[in-house]
Length: 310
Image 1 (cartoon, rainbow, N blue to C red):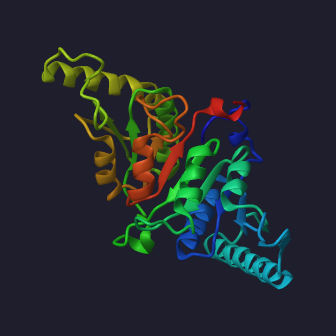
Image 2 (cartoon, rainbow, N blue to C red; image 1 turned 180 degrees about the horizontal axis):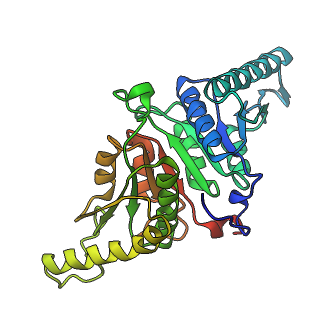
């Protein structure tokens, strides 16, 4: 078990696993994953569906007209979606504490707001197009702007049920403060799952051309430097989680490409929300953006804790 962190609302005993649903097959996969995740962590599950009714209407002259029958149908559909989601969750974890509701808010607004106190926010995506109605405005917006941890449940058509039931936890290590938070989350997940951990460190981003901040070293020297850096990054966590077997991988470039390759065998891929080269205002870095859209396994995106009070 992990130590209690009293300064972090995401790790309070009352913090729930929150899952967003939209009635798609991908969202049912996300519900099953979230229910299992919540049950294994001793957390309650909260199912949320945003009906996106705020501002709904048709402008006729100087008046905005909302047809009551359309709104009633949308609300009824929303109730059916959350009811179905609860049935799916109970099929996985019958004794799980579950709350479920549909609101008139947008899905992105609902999930971002609830992420402030959630243990984790879970959303579904399959294939390259995603399963939410608006991938760019919902899935990527939630991944970028949510607080704490977001899990995008991506699937592999060749896996049992679409999600790998086994395999290592894989974490991208880049040397940034956000990357350190991702390492902590990855060790915790590997320990909880009884899984091996693969720590992947890449010298440079796609277009960097600078290795370890020094362009004058030989490749051999650079390789040694980067291997030492990776060992230092994970050493403290290996002491804290001695039961986790760790494999360290050092690559030269293209972090997203290497992580996508590992996602084909991993049960979970963990990345920081933005990396070493990200601008302060960039809430979702290029590597995280790529893997949440194209990985073959669930992706856990870890945001820095300081964003909670920012």
